[in-house]
Image (cartoon, rainbow, N blue to C red; front, side, top):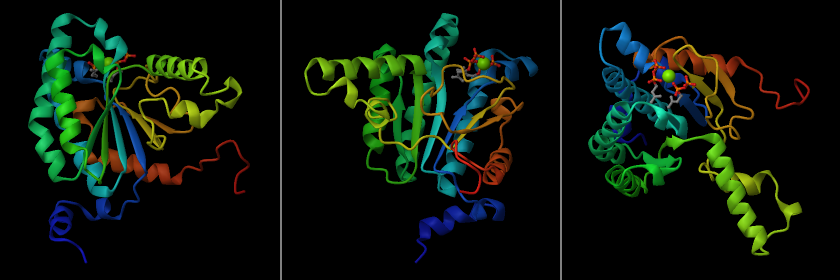
Amino acid sequence: MVSEKFRTMNLHMSEAEQQINPPRHIAMIMDGNGRWAEKHGQLRVKGHEAGAETVDRMVSLCAEIGVEVLTLYAFSSENWERPALEVAALMRLLQHYLRRETGRLRERNIRLRAIGRLQRLDLPVRRELEKACAETAAGSGMTLNLAISYGGRDELCDAARAVCREVQAGQYACEAIDHQHLAAHLGTAGLPDPDIMIRTGGEFRISNFLLWQLAYAELYFSDTLWPDFSREELLRIIRDFHQRERRFGRVPGR
Ligand code: IPE
Ligand code: IPE
Ligand code: MG
């Protein structure tokens, strides 16, 4: 039987949205907030504020169509090098988002998770994040995975260190280390690899995002600036994804 809640949720969805076959894991590099602000004659922080609305749109759509994991690149390890005022504004926005959204995430059965060097965050932001993750931990619908203070190289270094410690402690032989073992030490342990990676903002690069996990992701680069990224564009990308043949190094059709 379709629950009342699901029926209400479906009322907001177009026919196209209801028919879409969801990928398991979508990862997004949310780029172009600064240029969006510049285009509108505003300060960069206004671009980040507008970008937060796109986050709401994407979280809603992905949860509604049944995506298992949505990973959003919110702040990179290199973004710490930005002017202090911008870093502070981004941290404030993150805190704001967590305060405002935790209840709504829980209502929608969404589990929040975070990857990155979270120990670098100021204590109030880290507390807010830990609280939001704890309060949504029972969510069995979509996982919203925020990459914050995240760098793929940092993540791989941290995993290498953890594995080294196990080897030093005699728990593992070097020769026993395989893909599964290393992946289990990454921030994304337990999550499927992304099927689709989307970067908005017109740049053709990965910028230290999920270096290990993107090995066989289908890549999409959009010129749309993140605050303008729409539900329709994401649906177009998902539809295109289903047309692609993922070969994983094998011979087609086998
Ligand atoms: C992405 O937008 C948000 C973060 C990196 C935090 P940018 O701030 O990089 O926007 P552009 O690339 O300067 O337009
Ligand atoms: C990537 O965007 C990081 C995030 C979106 C959080 P950047 O704007 O930092 O990347 P570069 O500097 O253009 O490579
Ligand atoms: Mg950028």
